[in-house]
Length: 402
Image (cartoon, rainbow, N blue to C red; front, side):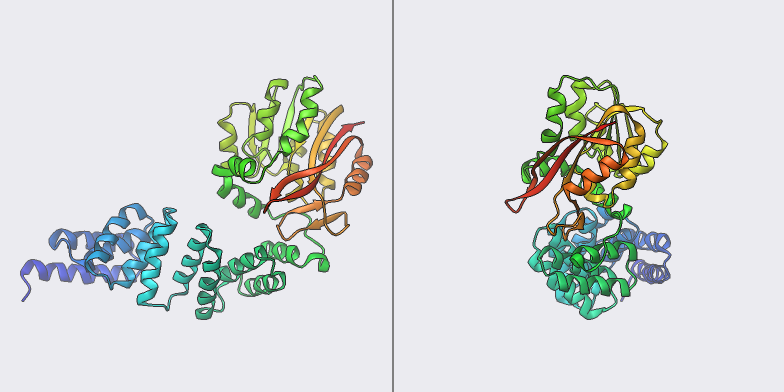
Protein backbone atom coordinates (compact mmCIF):
# COMPACT_ATOMS: atom_id res chain seq x y z
CA UNK A 1 0.00 0.00 0.00
CA UNK A 2 1.32 3.42 -0.93
CA UNK A 3 2.12 5.97 1.69
CA UNK A 4 0.50 9.40 1.29
CA UNK A 5 3.84 10.75 0.04
CA UNK A 6 4.17 7.97 -2.51
CA UNK A 7 0.60 8.47 -3.69
CA UNK A 8 1.22 12.18 -4.11
CA UNK A 9 4.41 11.44 -6.07
CA UNK A 10 2.50 9.01 -8.32
CA UNK A 11 -0.19 11.58 -9.11
CA UNK A 12 2.41 14.24 -9.88
CA UNK A 13 4.31 11.75 -12.05
CA UNK A 14 1.25 11.05 -14.21
CA UNK A 15 0.59 14.79 -14.46
CA UNK A 16 4.17 15.18 -15.70
CA UNK A 17 3.64 12.46 -18.30
CA UNK A 18 0.53 14.25 -19.58
CA UNK A 19 2.48 17.52 -19.85
CA UNK A 20 5.32 15.74 -21.66
CA UNK A 21 3.02 14.06 -24.16
CA UNK A 22 1.36 17.40 -24.89
CA UNK A 23 4.71 19.10 -25.48
CA UNK A 24 4.66 21.18 -22.30
CA UNK A 25 8.21 20.25 -21.38
CA UNK A 26 8.84 22.92 -18.75
CA UNK A 27 5.71 21.86 -16.89
CA UNK A 28 6.71 18.21 -17.23
CA UNK A 29 10.16 18.98 -15.85
CA UNK A 30 8.68 20.74 -12.84
CA UNK A 31 6.47 17.72 -12.09
CA UNK A 32 9.31 15.19 -12.42
CA UNK A 33 11.54 17.34 -10.18
CA UNK A 34 8.80 17.36 -7.50
CA UNK A 35 8.49 13.59 -7.84
CA UNK A 36 12.23 13.18 -7.43
CA UNK A 37 12.13 15.29 -4.28
CA UNK A 38 9.26 13.22 -2.83
CA UNK A 39 10.55 9.76 -3.85
CA UNK A 40 14.22 10.03 -4.80
CA UNK A 41 15.99 7.30 -6.71
CA UNK A 42 13.05 5.74 -8.54
CA UNK A 43 14.21 4.66 -12.04
CA UNK A 44 11.01 5.81 -13.74
CA UNK A 45 11.33 9.29 -12.24
CA UNK A 46 15.06 9.55 -12.92
CA UNK A 47 14.52 8.36 -16.49
CA UNK A 48 11.68 10.75 -17.28
CA UNK A 49 13.50 13.63 -15.65
CA UNK A 50 16.58 12.90 -17.78
CA UNK A 51 14.52 12.40 -20.94
CA UNK A 52 12.80 15.74 -20.41
CA UNK A 53 16.08 17.55 -19.77
CA UNK A 54 17.45 16.05 -22.98
CA UNK A 55 14.41 17.19 -24.94
CA UNK A 56 14.93 20.68 -23.50
CA UNK A 57 18.49 20.73 -24.85
CA UNK A 58 20.10 20.31 -21.42
CA UNK A 59 22.12 17.22 -22.31
CA UNK A 60 24.87 17.67 -19.74
CA UNK A 61 22.33 17.71 -16.90
CA UNK A 62 20.42 14.78 -18.41
CA UNK A 63 23.35 12.35 -18.68
CA UNK A 64 23.94 11.58 -14.96
CA UNK A 65 20.23 11.10 -14.31
CA UNK A 66 19.88 8.76 -17.29
CA UNK A 67 22.97 6.83 -16.23
CA UNK A 68 21.41 6.27 -12.81
CA UNK A 69 18.09 5.27 -14.38
CA UNK A 70 19.64 2.70 -16.73
CA UNK A 71 21.88 1.31 -13.99
CA UNK A 72 18.84 0.75 -11.79
CA UNK A 73 16.61 -0.47 -14.61
CA UNK A 74 18.70 -1.94 -17.48
CA UNK A 75 15.60 -2.72 -19.57
CA UNK A 76 14.47 0.92 -19.82
CA UNK A 77 14.71 1.53 -23.61
CA UNK A 78 13.58 5.16 -23.59
CA UNK A 79 16.21 6.06 -21.01
CA UNK A 80 18.93 4.28 -23.00
CA UNK A 81 17.78 6.11 -26.14
CA UNK A 82 17.81 9.51 -24.46
CA UNK A 83 21.20 8.75 -22.93
CA UNK A 84 22.61 7.92 -26.36
CA UNK A 85 21.17 11.06 -27.92
CA UNK A 86 22.42 13.19 -25.03
CA UNK A 87 25.94 11.82 -25.45
CA UNK A 88 25.64 12.49 -29.18
CA UNK A 89 24.63 16.09 -28.51
CA UNK A 90 27.76 16.46 -26.38
CA UNK A 91 29.99 15.00 -29.10
CA UNK A 92 30.72 11.87 -27.04
CA UNK A 93 30.39 9.53 -29.99
CA UNK A 94 31.61 6.23 -28.48
CA UNK A 95 29.41 6.57 -25.40
CA UNK A 96 26.50 7.59 -27.60
CA UNK A 97 26.94 4.52 -29.81
CA UNK A 98 27.07 2.19 -26.80
CA UNK A 99 23.86 3.61 -25.31
CA UNK A 100 22.05 3.61 -28.65
CA UNK A 101 23.00 -0.04 -29.20
CA UNK A 102 21.51 -0.88 -25.79
CA UNK A 103 18.31 0.96 -26.71
CA UNK A 104 18.04 -0.78 -30.07
CA UNK A 105 18.69 -4.19 -28.52
CA UNK A 106 15.55 -3.62 -26.44
CA UNK A 107 13.47 -2.12 -29.26
CA UNK A 108 14.64 -2.02 -32.89
CA UNK A 109 11.66 -0.09 -34.21
CA UNK A 110 13.05 3.46 -34.17
CA UNK A 111 14.47 4.73 -37.49
CA UNK A 112 15.71 7.86 -35.71
CA UNK A 113 17.87 5.79 -33.36
CA UNK A 114 19.32 3.72 -36.21
CA UNK A 115 20.12 6.98 -37.99
CA UNK A 116 21.79 8.41 -34.88
CA UNK A 117 23.83 5.22 -34.53
CA UNK A 118 24.96 5.58 -38.14
CA UNK A 119 25.97 9.17 -37.50
CA UNK A 120 28.03 8.13 -34.47
CA UNK A 121 29.72 5.37 -36.47
CA UNK A 122 30.72 7.94 -39.11
CA UNK A 123 32.13 10.26 -36.45
CA UNK A 124 34.14 7.36 -35.07
CA UNK A 125 35.48 6.53 -38.53
CA UNK A 126 33.60 3.21 -38.58
CA UNK A 127 32.04 3.64 -42.01
CA UNK A 128 31.52 -0.12 -42.37
CA UNK A 129 29.10 0.09 -39.41
CA UNK A 130 27.40 3.27 -40.59
CA UNK A 131 25.93 1.98 -43.86
CA UNK A 132 24.01 -0.95 -42.25
CA UNK A 133 22.63 1.46 -39.63
CA UNK A 134 21.29 3.80 -42.31
CA UNK A 135 19.87 0.81 -44.19
CA UNK A 136 18.00 -0.28 -41.04
CA UNK A 137 16.61 3.23 -40.65
CA UNK A 138 15.41 3.21 -44.25
CA UNK A 139 13.87 -0.24 -43.93
CA UNK A 140 11.70 1.20 -41.15
CA UNK A 141 11.07 4.54 -42.87
CA UNK A 142 11.67 4.57 -46.66
CA UNK A 143 10.95 8.34 -46.74
CA UNK A 144 13.76 9.21 -44.30
CA UNK A 145 15.46 11.91 -46.37
CA UNK A 146 18.49 12.45 -44.13
CA UNK A 147 19.23 8.72 -44.07
CA UNK A 148 19.15 8.58 -47.88
CA UNK A 149 21.48 11.58 -47.98
CA UNK A 150 24.00 10.12 -45.54
CA UNK A 151 23.83 6.76 -47.31
CA UNK A 152 24.60 8.51 -50.59
CA UNK A 153 27.60 10.25 -49.07
CA UNK A 154 29.02 6.96 -47.79
CA UNK A 155 28.57 5.29 -51.17
CA UNK A 156 30.15 8.27 -52.94
CA UNK A 157 33.19 8.04 -50.67
CA UNK A 158 33.39 4.32 -51.42
CA UNK A 159 33.43 4.98 -55.16
CA UNK A 160 30.00 3.36 -55.69
CA UNK A 161 28.80 6.34 -57.69
CA UNK A 162 25.68 4.90 -59.37
CA UNK A 163 24.35 3.70 -56.02
CA UNK A 164 25.18 7.08 -54.51
CA UNK A 165 23.23 8.83 -57.26
CA UNK A 166 20.20 6.63 -56.55
CA UNK A 167 20.37 7.53 -52.84
CA UNK A 168 20.58 11.25 -53.57
CA UNK A 169 17.60 10.97 -55.93
CA UNK A 170 15.62 9.21 -53.20
CA UNK A 171 16.63 11.94 -50.74
CA UNK A 172 15.29 14.62 -53.09
CA UNK A 173 12.05 12.66 -53.59
CA UNK A 174 11.69 12.46 -49.79
CA UNK A 175 11.98 16.24 -49.43
CA UNK A 176 15.71 16.87 -48.89
CA UNK A 177 17.30 20.18 -49.85
CA UNK A 178 17.02 20.18 -53.65
CA UNK A 179 19.88 22.61 -54.37
CA UNK A 180 22.31 20.74 -52.12
CA UNK A 181 21.43 17.31 -53.47
CA UNK A 182 21.52 18.48 -57.08
CA UNK A 183 25.12 19.42 -56.32
CA UNK A 184 25.78 15.96 -54.85
CA UNK A 185 24.17 14.34 -57.88
CA UNK A 186 26.23 16.32 -60.36
CA UNK A 187 29.40 15.26 -58.52
CA UNK A 188 28.66 11.53 -58.81
CA UNK A 189 27.21 11.61 -62.32
CA UNK A 190 30.46 12.85 -63.87
CA UNK A 191 29.91 14.27 -67.32
CA UNK A 192 26.27 13.18 -67.53
CA UNK A 193 25.02 16.53 -66.26
CA UNK A 194 26.34 20.10 -66.33
CA UNK A 195 27.68 20.97 -62.87
CA UNK A 196 26.12 23.80 -60.87
CA UNK A 197 27.93 27.12 -61.28
CA UNK A 198 29.13 27.07 -57.68
CA UNK A 199 28.91 25.05 -54.50
CA UNK A 200 25.81 25.83 -52.39
CA UNK A 201 26.68 28.42 -49.78
CA UNK A 202 25.11 26.36 -46.99
CA UNK A 203 27.30 23.39 -47.88
CA UNK A 204 30.57 25.35 -47.77
CA UNK A 205 29.64 27.20 -44.59
CA UNK A 206 28.59 24.05 -42.71
CA UNK A 207 31.59 22.07 -43.98
CA UNK A 208 34.13 24.55 -42.65
CA UNK A 209 32.25 25.46 -39.49
CA UNK A 210 32.43 21.76 -38.54
CA UNK A 211 36.05 21.49 -39.68
CA UNK A 212 37.51 24.68 -38.22
CA UNK A 213 39.05 23.43 -34.98
CA UNK A 214 41.25 20.77 -36.59
CA UNK A 215 41.45 22.30 -40.08
CA UNK A 216 45.06 23.50 -40.19
CA UNK A 217 46.55 20.47 -38.46
CA UNK A 218 44.59 18.02 -40.60
CA UNK A 219 45.53 19.75 -43.85
CA UNK A 220 49.22 20.18 -43.14
CA UNK A 221 49.91 16.97 -41.22
CA UNK A 222 47.27 14.65 -42.61
CA UNK A 223 47.11 15.74 -46.26
CA UNK A 224 50.62 17.17 -46.70
CA UNK A 225 49.01 20.45 -47.75
CA UNK A 226 51.63 22.90 -48.95
CA UNK A 227 49.60 25.05 -51.36
CA UNK A 228 50.02 28.38 -49.48
CA UNK A 229 53.78 27.93 -49.23
CA UNK A 230 54.20 26.91 -52.87
CA UNK A 231 51.90 29.68 -54.09
CA UNK A 232 53.23 32.54 -51.97
CA UNK A 233 56.92 31.88 -51.47
CA UNK A 234 57.91 33.40 -54.85
CA UNK A 235 55.97 36.57 -53.94
CA UNK A 236 57.63 36.72 -50.54
CA UNK A 237 61.07 36.16 -52.06
CA UNK A 238 60.50 38.92 -54.64
CA UNK A 239 61.18 41.57 -51.98
CA UNK A 240 58.03 43.52 -52.85
CA UNK A 241 56.05 44.97 -49.96
CA UNK A 242 52.28 44.70 -50.28
CA UNK A 243 50.20 47.70 -49.33
CA UNK A 244 46.88 45.85 -49.02
CA UNK A 245 46.26 42.13 -49.36
CA UNK A 246 42.82 40.52 -49.68
CA UNK A 247 42.89 36.87 -48.61
CA UNK A 248 39.86 35.22 -50.23
CA UNK A 249 38.54 32.15 -48.41
CA UNK A 250 41.13 32.90 -45.73
CA UNK A 251 40.11 29.95 -43.54
CA UNK A 252 42.23 29.72 -40.41
CA UNK A 253 44.85 32.09 -41.78
CA UNK A 254 47.47 29.87 -43.40
CA UNK A 255 48.14 32.48 -46.11
CA UNK A 256 47.86 35.50 -43.83
CA UNK A 257 50.49 34.13 -41.49
CA UNK A 258 52.96 33.73 -44.39
CA UNK A 259 52.30 37.18 -45.86
CA UNK A 260 52.26 39.18 -42.63
CA UNK A 261 56.01 40.09 -42.61
CA UNK A 262 55.81 41.61 -46.12
CA UNK A 263 52.36 43.29 -45.92
CA UNK A 264 51.10 46.56 -44.46
CA UNK A 265 47.49 45.33 -44.16
CA UNK A 266 45.79 41.97 -44.75
CA UNK A 267 42.01 41.63 -44.92
CA UNK A 268 40.40 38.19 -44.87
CA UNK A 269 37.00 37.05 -46.05
CA UNK A 270 35.37 33.64 -45.55
CA UNK A 271 31.89 32.14 -45.36
CA UNK A 272 32.65 30.25 -42.14
CA UNK A 273 32.39 32.13 -38.86
CA UNK A 274 34.25 29.32 -37.10
CA UNK A 275 37.15 29.59 -39.53
CA UNK A 276 37.32 33.35 -39.05
CA UNK A 277 37.45 32.88 -35.29
CA UNK A 278 40.51 30.68 -35.70
CA UNK A 279 42.12 33.21 -38.05
CA UNK A 280 41.46 36.05 -35.60
CA UNK A 281 43.64 34.33 -33.00
CA UNK A 282 46.71 34.81 -35.23
CA UNK A 283 46.57 38.60 -34.92
CA UNK A 284 47.79 39.17 -38.49
CA UNK A 285 44.57 40.39 -40.13
CA UNK A 286 43.43 44.00 -40.10
CA UNK A 287 39.87 42.99 -40.90
CA UNK A 288 38.02 39.66 -41.09
CA UNK A 289 34.63 39.55 -42.79
CA UNK A 290 32.10 36.73 -43.05
CA UNK A 291 30.76 37.00 -46.59
CA UNK A 292 30.59 35.50 -50.05
CA UNK A 293 33.87 36.41 -51.72
CA UNK A 294 32.37 37.80 -54.95
CA UNK A 295 29.83 39.89 -53.05
CA UNK A 296 32.58 41.17 -50.77
CA UNK A 297 34.78 42.20 -53.68
CA UNK A 298 31.85 43.91 -55.39
CA UNK A 299 31.52 46.21 -52.37
CA UNK A 300 35.25 47.06 -52.26
CA UNK A 301 36.70 50.22 -53.77
CA UNK A 302 38.16 49.79 -57.27
CA UNK A 303 41.93 49.57 -57.32
CA UNK A 304 42.11 49.29 -53.53
CA UNK A 305 44.40 46.23 -53.31
CA UNK A 306 47.73 45.26 -54.78
CA UNK A 307 47.56 41.52 -53.94
CA UNK A 308 44.58 39.15 -53.92
CA UNK A 309 45.13 35.56 -52.83
CA UNK A 310 42.82 32.58 -53.44
CA UNK A 311 44.55 29.42 -52.23
CA UNK A 312 42.32 26.35 -52.66
CA UNK A 313 39.27 28.57 -53.08
CA UNK A 314 38.18 27.86 -56.65
CA UNK A 315 37.50 24.24 -55.69
CA UNK A 316 34.21 25.61 -54.30
CA UNK A 317 33.62 28.35 -56.89
CA UNK A 318 33.02 26.38 -60.07
CA UNK A 319 32.38 28.81 -62.93
CA UNK A 320 35.00 31.50 -62.12
CA UNK A 321 34.16 34.38 -64.47
CA UNK A 322 32.39 36.55 -61.87
CA UNK A 323 35.24 36.04 -59.40
CA UNK A 324 37.94 36.98 -61.93
CA UNK A 325 36.03 40.10 -62.99
CA UNK A 326 35.59 41.14 -59.35
CA UNK A 327 39.28 40.62 -58.59
CA UNK A 328 40.30 42.56 -61.70
CA UNK A 329 38.12 45.44 -60.54
CA UNK A 330 39.57 45.62 -57.02
CA UNK A 331 43.24 45.25 -58.03
CA UNK A 332 45.29 48.28 -58.96
CA UNK A 333 47.23 48.21 -62.22
CA UNK A 334 50.25 45.96 -61.74
CA UNK A 335 48.56 44.21 -58.83
CA UNK A 336 48.82 40.44 -58.45
CA UNK A 337 46.20 37.72 -58.26
CA UNK A 338 47.72 34.50 -56.87
CA UNK A 339 45.53 31.41 -56.99
CA UNK A 340 45.47 27.64 -57.11
CA UNK A 341 43.13 25.29 -58.94
CA UNK A 342 42.80 21.54 -58.91
CA UNK A 343 43.44 19.84 -62.26
CA UNK A 344 40.48 18.06 -63.93
CA UNK A 345 40.59 14.39 -64.84
CA UNK A 346 38.32 14.46 -67.88
CA UNK A 347 39.98 17.06 -70.12
CA UNK A 348 37.19 19.60 -69.68
CA UNK A 349 37.67 23.21 -68.59
CA UNK A 350 35.41 22.66 -65.57
CA UNK A 351 34.68 19.43 -63.73
CA UNK A 352 32.81 18.73 -60.49
CA UNK A 353 34.60 15.77 -58.94
CA UNK A 354 33.08 13.06 -56.70
CA UNK A 355 35.04 14.71 -53.87
CA UNK A 356 32.55 17.61 -54.24
CA UNK A 357 35.39 19.89 -55.37
CA UNK A 358 35.60 21.71 -58.70
CA UNK A 359 38.60 21.25 -60.98
CA UNK A 360 39.68 23.80 -63.60
CA UNK A 361 41.89 23.22 -66.63
CA UNK A 362 44.96 25.45 -66.87
CA UNK A 363 44.09 26.44 -70.45
CA UNK A 364 40.61 27.60 -69.41
CA UNK A 365 42.00 29.66 -66.52
CA UNK A 366 44.54 31.26 -68.86
CA UNK A 367 41.87 32.21 -71.43
CA UNK A 368 39.63 33.72 -68.78
CA UNK A 369 42.49 35.62 -67.16
CA UNK A 370 43.54 37.22 -70.45
CA UNK A 371 39.94 38.05 -71.33
CA UNK A 372 39.33 40.06 -68.14
CA UNK A 373 42.66 41.90 -68.10
CA UNK A 374 45.35 39.71 -66.55
CA UNK A 375 48.70 38.59 -67.87
CA UNK A 376 49.90 35.17 -66.78
CA UNK A 377 53.15 35.88 -65.00
CA UNK A 378 53.80 32.31 -63.89
CA UNK A 379 52.17 28.89 -63.96
CA UNK A 380 53.41 25.94 -61.94
CA UNK A 381 51.94 22.45 -62.26
CA UNK A 382 52.38 20.70 -58.90
CA UNK A 383 50.37 18.75 -56.30
CA UNK A 384 47.94 20.66 -54.10
CA UNK A 385 47.65 18.01 -51.39
CA UNK A 386 47.79 14.25 -50.92
CA UNK A 387 44.73 12.04 -50.48
CA UNK A 388 44.99 8.37 -49.54
CA UNK A 389 48.72 8.68 -50.13
CA UNK A 390 48.34 9.98 -53.69
CA UNK A 391 49.14 13.50 -54.93
CA UNK A 392 46.25 15.65 -56.13
CA UNK A 393 47.39 17.46 -59.26
CA UNK A 394 46.97 21.21 -59.38
CA UNK A 395 47.97 24.46 -61.08
CA UNK A 396 49.51 27.48 -59.32
CA UNK A 397 48.90 30.78 -61.13
CA UNK A 398 50.40 34.21 -60.59
CA UNK A 399 48.45 36.75 -62.65
CA UNK A 400 49.31 40.44 -63.07
CA UNK A 401 46.68 43.13 -63.64
CA UNK A 402 47.41 44.87 -66.94
